[in-house]
Amino acid sequence: MNDKTILGHNQPENQDQLKQYTLIIYVLYAVSIIVGLTCIAAIIMNYIKRDEVQGTWLASHFEWQIKTFWVTLIAGVIGFVLSFILIGIPILLAATIWFIYRIVKGLIVFNDNKPIGDGWF
View 1 (tube, rainbow, N blue to C red):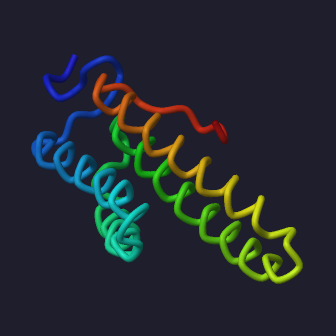
View 2 (tube, rainbow, N blue to C red):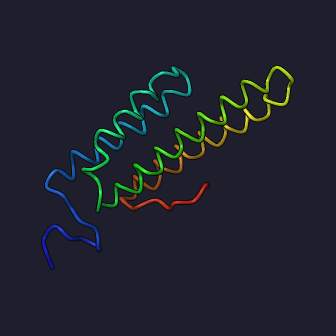
């Protein structure tokens, strides 16, 4: 077995840097709940380093983060448009709760050094 292969996952030379990078992205998403625009920096960072994490357990976290961003953005736009007829308010609330849940769950699984599932929850 190659020294870079642990538990069936490829371990790149810069594993610690990629872990720190992934954590920073989670923090940017979490801060965006209050600040808002930090999620733009986070999604850009996701796409910049996406190829580097392929084949590692961190790749699942990148996919999780990217999916969280895009689904929340789409739900937010739909909720905003529909808020003028009051249907959008529950959509915005649900999207916010879902976003917070996904960031918290992602951080917990990340902290355990494990890949995260591909589901919606």
